[in-house]
Length: 380
Image (cartoon, rainbow, N blue to C red; front, side):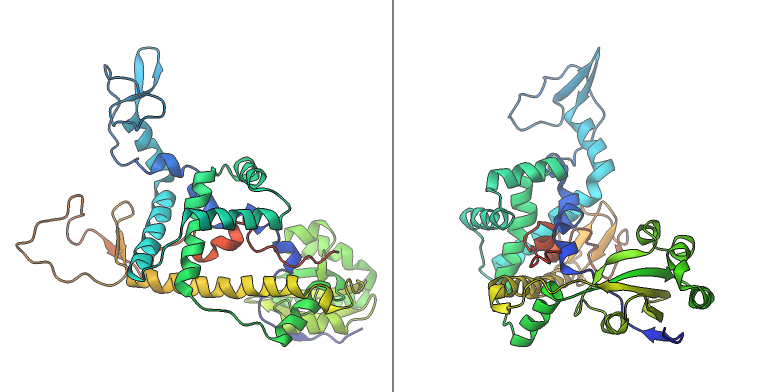
């Protein structure tokens, strides 16, 4: 059993297998749930009686009726006003982001065709063993994303940013070997107790050191991580090269039933590990999965390039958001006192200058959110 000690590490990253379905939970997808309706939702007025109902398939006018309840009517404007109040900020962010990318593409003479968007969607679907129609249906069922929204707010921004990045990524043999070990090599099966207080971690470690068989019970009582706590501290097997070198070193030094010292995994986050064995090597020859690993690493490096290019173009674009009363990007030149005012612009001094566009749906992360980067399967 190891002596009590504190090992300093950086924050951990999830194993590649746990990221396979990341598209289900984040990124641009959540911002376009009601995107189609919100595009024209900026003319909110109270409902009025005595106007014509909106015709199906035709563009709605501000005073057209979209519903009737007994003698009262609901107009397009009233619906738009409610939509803006509920979802306007997210949808406006999505539109702003796409407009920033579009303007950057125009400056760089870059374009993305409908055929390229379709080809990318087919590629994504194929990597999940689906055809495009089945992939659309899954997006619709799981995230309420229409094909049009997926094309314009997820796939198009990613392809545009890839073209703007315009850099061919290179994969080294060392990177391939590390990815091979990470995805297919042996892993440490472990239980973990997580703390946000070093003193408490030391107290619990001393108790466990006296009674190692109480580890599972101690995890249920003291761990601050609700997921592993409910399982008596059990966590997914820990691979090598997953982003926390010292944590991995501590885990791989342990023998069966051995307990680690106190390992710091982030700011005010500490864990105690108990080894429960190791998994077997899944694939012994890297050449069997070389192509899969190359694709995975290229996708990962492309993500970094895409995020970087979006950060660059957004800092170069001046954005005045009158809905949230914030402005970002470079300052505008002092206006000519005799120049005409911009329709709809907020009065001078009414907008707070912030450091950057707030991106709950950063296009630089769209590829993962869309499921276009399935990782090399861990096959556990």
